[in-house]
Amino acid sequence: MTSLSYDIKDKLKNLNIFEKIIAVNVIIFFASWLIAVVLKIPRESTLTWLELPKDFLDFIVQPWSIISYGFLHYRPFHLLFNMIVLYFVSRTMVNLFPRNQSLSIYFLGIIAGGLAYVSVYNIMPEHLSSKVGSLVGASAGVNALLIFICAYMPYRETQFFAIKIKLWHIGLAIVVIDFVGLFGINQGGKVAHLGGSLLGYLYATQLLKGKDIGKSFGEFIDRISSFFKQKPTLKTVHKNKKKPFAGHNKEQFSEFNNQKKIDLILDKISKSGYDSLTKEEKAFLFKAGKD
Image 1 (cartoon, helix red, strand yellow):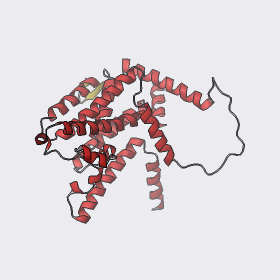
Image 2: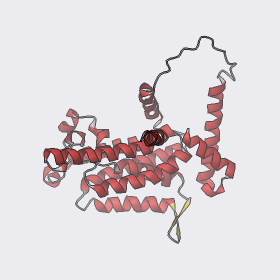
Image 3: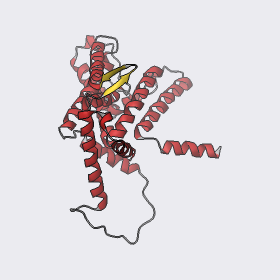
Image 4: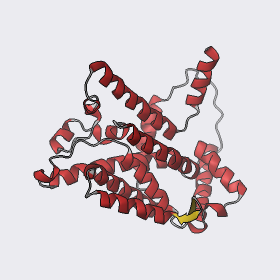
């Protein structure tokens, strides 16, 4: 039993950041189910303080919901679909792009989807939005990642059964399906999907121009994560000063070189596709995604 607990802890420790996000989504789903069973109340009434309300004044009272709604699912198939897509998309993201950049796209997609949802339903006449409930689900963030990849590497091909499809075809299909869905029963969800998709598209097109629009948000994520990191208890008495390289120490110089190499490889992917990379370049990207 002790060995098993160590194995579980080791596996959890080695999860990448998106796998941890998936785990949190699953835990919250089962927590809402357990609360509903114990208190004998409907699932939709268990964790309402995590939902994003459509009314602007209600949103002001619980501003955290602009992100927390992305961790809440009530229907099992809603959770299953979002987490499966997130798992496979995130594997591509962490192998090709820096961790903070991938996280920025995901969470900014959730925020953009939430803002689009609140904005639309505070502009629409009340009789058209009276049947729309609060917003839940990670779909806006998932869409942001999907559309980002499709827009950043539009001509890369992927296999769909026996057919090869370019990524921009997949991105276009996602947007069209969500737009058609605006006339269906899940209008609120589709508005959020389109908000996330727009964020992913803008992020990709700006990044291709050399501008990272989520850089500040990524730095904010860094500050939060560093707050929770365990600080070392041992103090180093003697420190060896490292000689600077062009005003930077060895670690900074090495990080700069690695980032430049990543940028060149990503540029090669956007022009010629992932399959044009050498084994060394693929291995380098895989290692960079794990760091």
